[in-house]
Image (tube, rainbow, N blue to C red; front, side, top):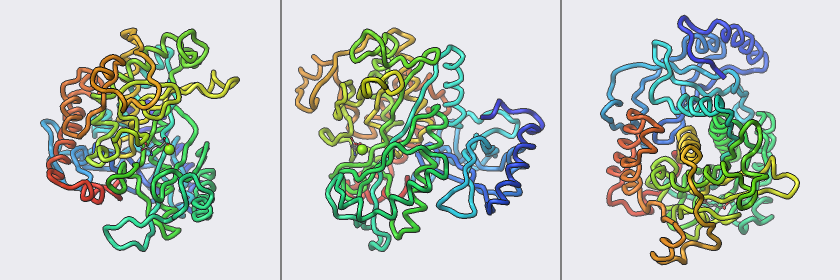
Length: 464
Ligand code: GLU
Ligand code: MG
């Protein structure tokens, strides 16, 4: 991973890039995709021929900062600090994450940091922001491991425009469903293995046409990169199999959606704080405060964890989307699920799963938000509220208050209000990026005002 920018290019990296480009060319790679994710959660790219890799590493590739205030439908808005036609940034590929794409012959892929022409990290670069946060923690001996689960719905590629026709009919978790997309699922496993992605599981999920891939945990920046890479791979393979894939939180209105559940663990001096403690389910005091911080941070972070108007079609109680800000042990209706893992594996496996997040979220902003909220809890020694068992939907207002439970925002407008008034989000993202997040969410709201759930689902179905 890059050190901070070096004025005059990156001599050490350039040598590495030159060698890597030669190896890539020998493997039949012609182009390198330079990939980042915008504020709206859309993966945007530029690409260079493989011979241009060293130059891209030394000097970056030009790109307008206007994407910081792009909407999911490619229209633009602006915030107090960002938007408009002026300025240029440099996209600088991270060579250590460069991956030859198994499902797109001739192509390699690398996530980028966005930098100014003066060589400083761009104020709205979400990847740099997450890396700064992780490095600050590491200097205090605290590290994190993260993994983002990928749920997606497979549709038939030959469906009429505007329609989603599931590419399988079998039941949830059914062998029939796996048989129906057997070649596709095997191709996904093969491609991800050749790209160095360790897959934990692939399985048919609950909703129509839905499947899920879970992957191994990594350092948070790498985990966010991986979430982008896995989706690009699945998308490319779907196309090659005559299918179309949707990662949208709500593929159709009124059903179970696609989640992007986040597994997160916090380690002190290399030891997992979520196991071996004297608190509930083996949590140490640090883990309890981390979870308390997470639970408290989820309402103001809704505009990041569930950033799309489509996210709120998914955020329904009793849909396994975790719409109540509280925690439970292996509970699938609490936003935070404490996972201990199997006896004997707990010092490695124990973690927390944040269920409310979806795949419209920019994964860098998402992990920065969740880690920041947890860190806040640890810094203030926050006390963990009571465990919730069962579905919190049964609580009336008094029950919610008694258990210290909050329903997460029921719409994007409420989410933006919570985000705007929260000291946590301002401190985490800084004024400029927070302003862009607010502006983009407000513009998505204005665009979809008065739309039916069906129209919202259709508009965002293929975007993320
Ligand atoms: N599809 C559900 C969601 O929207 C999650 C199902 C599960 O627990 O894996 O998050
Ligand atoms: Mg699932």
